[in-house]
Image (tube, rainbow, N blue to C red):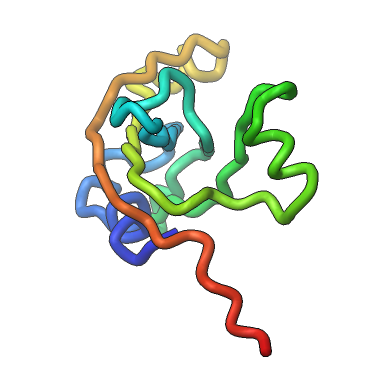
Amino acid sequence: MSKTLAKACCCSNRLPAWGDRLVQVDVYAKNAAGEWEPRPIATSDRLVWGKGQQWQHMFTLLADADSARAQTWRTAKPALPRGAYQVRVLVDRATAAQAERGQHRLELAGTLEATSGWPEKDTAP
Protein backbone atom coordinates (compact mmCIF):
# COMPACT_ATOMS: atom_id res chain seq x y z
CA MET A 1 0.00 0.00 0.00
CA SER A 2 1.35 3.41 -0.86
CA LYS A 3 2.05 5.85 1.98
CA THR A 4 -0.68 8.15 0.66
CA LEU A 5 -3.24 5.36 0.62
CA ALA A 6 -2.16 4.11 4.02
CA LYS A 7 -2.46 7.60 5.46
CA ALA A 8 -5.93 8.07 3.98
CA CYS A 9 -7.17 4.77 5.37
CA CYS A 10 -5.35 4.49 8.67
CA CYS A 11 -4.44 7.88 10.04
CA SER A 12 -7.40 10.12 9.30
CA ASN A 13 -8.68 12.60 11.84
CA ARG A 14 -12.09 11.02 11.18
CA LEU A 15 -11.17 7.92 13.12
CA PRO A 16 -12.46 9.15 16.50
CA ALA A 17 -15.98 9.37 15.00
CA TRP A 18 -15.48 5.96 13.40
CA GLY A 19 -14.29 4.35 16.65
CA ASP A 20 -15.57 0.79 17.12
CA ARG A 21 -17.43 0.94 13.81
CA LEU A 22 -16.99 -1.37 10.84
CA VAL A 23 -15.01 0.19 7.98
CA GLN A 24 -14.93 -1.48 4.58
CA VAL A 25 -12.43 -0.40 1.94
CA ASP A 26 -12.93 -1.49 -1.68
CA VAL A 27 -10.30 -0.94 -4.37
CA TYR A 28 -11.43 -0.59 -8.01
CA ALA A 29 -9.03 -0.81 -10.98
CA LYS A 30 -9.31 1.32 -14.10
CA ASN A 31 -9.73 -0.85 -17.20
CA ALA A 32 -8.21 -0.40 -20.68
CA ALA A 33 -11.23 1.72 -21.72
CA GLY A 34 -10.40 4.18 -18.92
CA GLU A 35 -13.43 3.24 -16.81
CA TRP A 36 -13.57 1.94 -13.25
CA GLU A 37 -14.25 -1.79 -13.19
CA PRO A 38 -17.72 -2.59 -11.82
CA ARG A 39 -16.39 -4.97 -9.15
CA PRO A 40 -13.48 -4.38 -6.76
CA ILE A 41 -10.07 -5.93 -7.35
CA ALA A 42 -9.40 -5.86 -3.59
CA THR A 43 -11.39 -5.44 -0.39
CA SER A 44 -10.95 -5.34 3.35
CA ASP A 45 -13.18 -4.78 6.35
CA ARG A 46 -12.54 -4.48 10.04
CA LEU A 47 -13.61 -2.52 13.08
CA VAL A 48 -11.77 0.70 13.83
CA TRP A 49 -9.90 0.40 17.11
CA GLY A 50 -11.61 3.28 18.89
CA LYS A 51 -9.21 3.61 21.80
CA GLY A 52 -6.16 3.62 19.55
CA GLN A 53 -7.94 5.51 16.76
CA GLN A 54 -6.54 3.09 14.21
CA TRP A 55 -7.78 0.96 11.32
CA GLN A 56 -5.32 -1.58 10.05
CA HIS A 57 -5.99 -4.67 8.00
CA MET A 58 -4.81 -6.66 4.99
CA PHE A 59 -6.59 -6.57 1.64
CA THR A 60 -8.01 -9.64 -0.08
CA LEU A 61 -7.44 -9.70 -3.85
CA LEU A 62 -10.49 -10.59 -5.96
CA ALA A 63 -10.84 -12.04 -9.49
CA ASP A 64 -13.40 -14.14 -11.35
CA ALA A 65 -12.13 -17.75 -11.48
CA ASP A 66 -12.00 -17.85 -15.29
CA SER A 67 -10.53 -14.35 -15.80
CA ALA A 68 -7.13 -13.44 -17.20
CA ARG A 69 -6.33 -11.80 -13.86
CA ALA A 70 -7.01 -15.06 -11.98
CA GLN A 71 -4.86 -16.97 -14.44
CA THR A 72 -2.00 -14.50 -13.91
CA TRP A 73 -2.33 -14.81 -10.14
CA ARG A 74 -2.30 -18.63 -10.39
CA THR A 75 1.00 -18.62 -12.26
CA ALA A 76 2.79 -15.80 -10.42
CA LYS A 77 2.72 -14.09 -7.05
CA PRO A 78 -0.69 -12.39 -6.71
CA ALA A 79 -0.33 -8.62 -6.59
CA LEU A 80 -2.16 -5.52 -7.70
CA PRO A 81 -0.88 -4.55 -11.15
CA ARG A 82 0.50 -1.11 -11.89
CA GLY A 83 -2.22 1.33 -12.80
CA ALA A 84 -4.95 3.66 -11.61
CA TYR A 85 -7.21 2.79 -8.70
CA GLN A 86 -10.22 4.23 -6.95
CA VAL A 87 -10.48 3.46 -3.24
CA ARG A 88 -13.96 3.64 -1.71
CA VAL A 89 -14.24 3.86 2.07
CA LEU A 90 -17.55 2.78 3.61
CA VAL A 91 -18.46 3.19 7.28
CA ASP A 92 -21.15 1.28 9.14
CA ARG A 93 -23.74 3.73 10.48
CA ALA A 94 -25.72 1.05 12.32
CA THR A 95 -26.24 1.36 16.05
CA ALA A 96 -24.36 -1.10 18.25
CA ALA A 97 -27.58 -3.10 18.73
CA GLN A 98 -28.22 -3.23 14.96
CA ALA A 99 -24.65 -4.29 14.25
CA GLU A 100 -24.88 -7.01 16.89
CA ARG A 101 -27.91 -8.39 15.02
CA GLY A 102 -26.00 -8.24 11.72
CA GLN A 103 -28.01 -5.27 10.44
CA HIS A 104 -25.16 -3.21 9.01
CA ARG A 105 -25.72 0.08 7.16
CA LEU A 106 -22.60 0.79 5.15
CA GLU A 107 -22.47 4.34 3.79
CA LEU A 108 -19.86 5.81 1.46
CA ALA A 109 -17.57 8.02 3.54
CA GLY A 110 -15.26 9.03 0.72
CA THR A 111 -13.16 8.07 -2.26
CA LEU A 112 -9.52 8.41 -3.20
CA GLU A 113 -7.97 8.01 -6.63
CA ALA A 114 -4.35 6.97 -6.95
CA THR A 115 -1.90 5.70 -9.53
CA SER A 116 0.23 2.89 -8.24
CA GLY A 117 3.66 1.52 -8.98
CA TRP A 118 2.82 -1.94 -7.65
CA PRO A 119 4.44 -4.31 -7.83
CA GLU A 120 7.83 -2.80 -7.23
CA LYS A 121 10.49 -3.78 -9.72
CA ASP A 122 12.52 -6.81 -8.76
CA THR A 123 15.98 -5.52 -7.91
CA ALA A 124 17.56 -8.96 -7.53
CA PRO A 125 20.62 -9.54 -9.73
